Structure formats: structure tokens, C-alpha cells
Amino acid sequence: MTVTKTPIYFLSHGGPNIMYETDHPAYKKLREIGQQITTTVKPKAVVVFSAHWQAEKQKVQVNTAENTDLIYDFYNFPAHYYKEEYPNVASKEVAEKVLTLLDRAGIEAEGVKRGLDHGVWASFKCAFDPQQNPLNVPLVQVSLFDSEDPDQHYRLGEAVSALREENIQIIVSGMAVHNLRDLAYAKGQSKPMPYTTSFDDALKDAVTAAPAERQKEMAAILERPDARQAHPTFDHLLPIYIGAGAAGEDVGTRLFTLAQASMSWAQYRFGNV
Image (cartoon, rainbow, N blue to C red; front, side, top):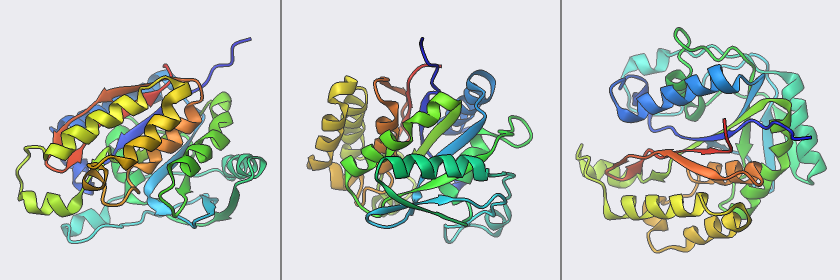
């Protein structure tokens, strides 16, 4: 008997300004992905991992709060950014499922009460517009480890993979290329840095490799000379390792990419719809 599994999505989420840039190609792609999830996948819940929550080196945290406030974890934006709202409801039942799976995999984890960071709610406002395409299912956020170990995060994905068999959608949110320092130097110029394109291409090759080779290929790209240019810290890249681990034998597909200055907006899906 074939078990139906939900696909996994990696969202390059950008800064909170993407919420207002409705003509941006990445905004349009996020919206398309959101519509695919609500109309075709139709999950009963969503579990999301964001680059903006790292717990401890050997421990992850799971948000068990059912009513979750927003965290405005960005600085020097206009005042109205800090008044944004995103309606969401969590699920203790789903959070407990995650904690149980992590325990079975030998991963130390704890439940905590925390808000949603902008790596979740800003991109979800694009993908799941509350008026036009509401998510309308529970949303539970899980942290990364506070480490840069790709295999550790791959195993974290493997640990929660079984959620897919229960019609629970796994979304991992980060950025395919993310160098804020060089973005400031770019002064509004969108021409991609050489490393933006080269690392974006290398990431595609690794993520779309045969599943049996994928973990090794994805670990190897962190040793590339352009890796620390593309990601001075790996926090925005590590979510895709969780997604790849959760994918098991399912193949990764790049749905979209756009290299701008020191950023890449590549979006990925593992598995079929």
C-alpha cells in the first residue's frame, strides 16, 4: 500500500518589506506556493522551521503555545511594520507529536511558549494572505539547533518526516543566499554578486541530487570558497537541510530563483503535489 505524503517546501523569505512588494517576482511565487498548499495539498496542520529561531547546540525547542503573538525581530523599518498582524492558532496535539518524534529519534527537545518570528509570519502573509488565501489550520513552529552542523539539521528533518504521513505540511523558511552586509554596500543595485549566482547554482545541484547522494552533496557545498560569502552565517541556509532530511527518498525541485545583489530568492519543493 502506497502511503500518501505531503510535499515539503523551502521558502526564501527575504525581509519584512516583501509583504508590501506585491509586484516583486518572489512575492508572486510565494503566493502561488501558498495557493498550491491550500487548494491542492490541503494539510490538516503546518509545522514550520525558521532561520530566526535557534535554540541550543544539542537541543531544539517546540512552540506549545496555542495563542501565539508575533515577534517583530527586525530593526529600522517604518512604524507600520510593527503593527502588522497575522492571525494564527497553534495546536498542543501537533506540538506533542513533534516532541514525541524527536524523543524517539534521540534528539533532546523541550516545549516552550514563544511568538512567531518574521521568518514565518512575513512570508506567510505573502503565501497565505488572511483575506484572499487564509491557511485556516494549526501552525506550530520548531527551532533549529544553535549550530552550523548540516548533518545535525538533516537528522532533525529525518526525525519529523513521519508527520508527512499524517497530512501535516512541513515548511522550512530561510534564504538561498543571504549576505546582509553586502546588501548594504549594494545601495539598491540589484545586479547579483558573482557569489550569489555561483552558490545559488551549487545549491540547486546539491538539493536536486539523487536522494541517496543528497546529504553528502549538501554538506559539501558548505566547504566551497563562496559559501561564507553567500552566507556569512549559515542560519538562513540550514532550514533547507531540515527539509531535505524530512524528504527521505523524495526528490528536490527548484521551483523558482531570482538572484538580486547578495540575495537569492530560490524556492524549493521536495516531493510531488
